[in-house]
Image (cartoon, rainbow, N blue to C red; front, top):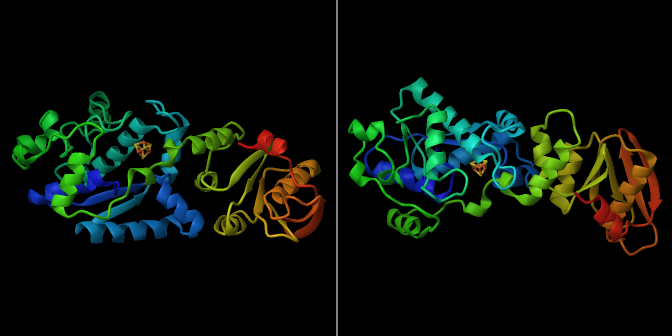
Length: 335
Ligand code: SF4
């Protein structure tokens, strides 16, 4: 299983050095910061992103790679993860079990010998301490068939080691949060183009978590993939229990809102450069005036006494003239 981070690439390189025939699996759970950015800023579909990632990994690693979109299914996992959340809304243990379970299905279905990951003992607080690693191995149905080459010598021998498919002596014993040994190994193996840990999972982001919990606290229906993309962009302001607005922060976000959320009420300023605002929910006239005031506040007309704002709903376009929202209003509504 390859995430694109250094550890998983090192694990691939190490096993290839040992002569193992490797196929890469990369799962798109819909919350990778890089893929969310591409969806908003480059208007890419998840299929396009999957195709790009496949090409990138294959040329980087020289092995066949399958990029598998599990984003719809992954949303169910967030509703009530069995092993709970980490610091934010990251259900890391359930996530590992889910993805490794998918890898196991492929392993069993196609006659592969084992699954391996780039996990390092003690590197991540929630999912990479010994108890969690054992739990994940067992719950994913991979007992004895999950190899972690970078720290294997600190763990019990797996079946492929016992069967002689892998020489345990050639595996590593890296542990802890320091990246020094991995960096040195990357230099040795000539690995350069890897993702930084900061480019990682949006579910670990505090701001994203706050917006996600605000959404789930105000809807009865299930969260959709489109919702999760919207949460990753713009300024979110809740005007009432049933009405929220999202204000674009730059041209790419404005374009995204217009193209993907154009079925909702959209607002923008008429006489000044300004954002596109989308209204989620069924707004009252007063809430439309508030949305217009926020739109004006984030436009170049923010210091004017009044600003003209266009309000588009379905085929209807009308105009409102409002005073830009005050700081106090923004603080009151900001999610
Ligand atoms: S950080 Fe995100 S992708 Fe990584 S294990 Fe946790 S939930 Fe899964």
